[in-house]
Length: 450
View: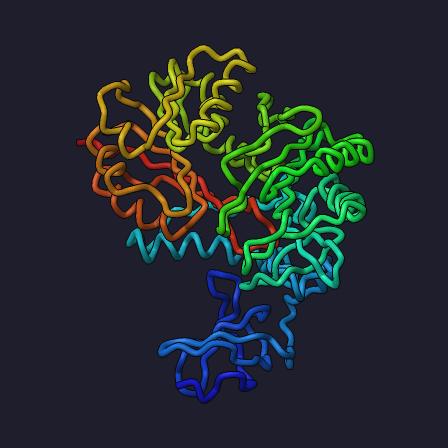
């Protein structure tokens, strides 16, 4: 079975897979996933992994390029694993993402002709991200920052990232220069030794203010000096924090965050409302597209609605934006820190009809403490909505459900379960993450007459 491992194969790419890999077939019939290849191309690819039903490969050469292939704007595109589609014409990337949503609904929700609207493109497919997470490393005794190669933990040393806000790229360059004189050690996963793990940088689209979070295995007096250096070097930096993660884990953040310099949050805006963004807050990373995404969602709440539930509420962004359209909004969020941020955001905007409850959605929707919803908005994680929650929603019977999804496959699965009582009026894909293989969407489900 492994006879072809490390062999070069000449294949024709037939279509694009869901993880940004071109799909071809080997002579023995096995499906063959090739990183960096585009539909219609004839390529030479080296087999790097062999399984009974499929194989994976690395692109060696493009023998007959697709007319949709473009020159990446990023010089690290061939190494860094952060983007899947730096080499693909943006309109074709959009068509692929729209079709992925359509196919997921057809295949998983059993809808022959799903009501999928045209995808909403990003006005700027580059330099859009307002958050970057960069691991530290060491190469030849030199401290580096960067991103990992695709499907590996080999660090690619970067001085900028083509999809990051330029404010973040500025911090990336300053941090490497300013950290060098302190002779810090970078964390090594294999041994669990070293001090510096990650640098997390956030920018505010509204104010151009920046927060920097140093993730380290332990506290060190030199980190306060580095924090002061960073703030002095870049006037946009308004605060520097320290997060301690001493665990042998791939998780980026640990459980303890302290402020080293400046302030612990900045203000950003969505659709005219203001929101605190702190070191660890969940906040959508594309400020241009998030307004479009959330406008799609909240516009589906009829004016004068009685009760809205916002499930998986995060820092309360959707709940706040929904508040002018409803008598009461009840938000549910598992993270106590995010729920606290949400309450601050409600106060910041002077909202008195929004209520936050901290706990698991799966448990809270089954209690009688919340009033029955007329509309439910939900923005779950990639794994989608637990079947018990969907069952409870079918029992409660809100007039409509607005489902924001970051995973077309779990969206299709969940809508299939809701179709006993709800009809899908429309699904609108939104390209929140250009150059990557991720796509978000807003689906509107209307309760059928009983």
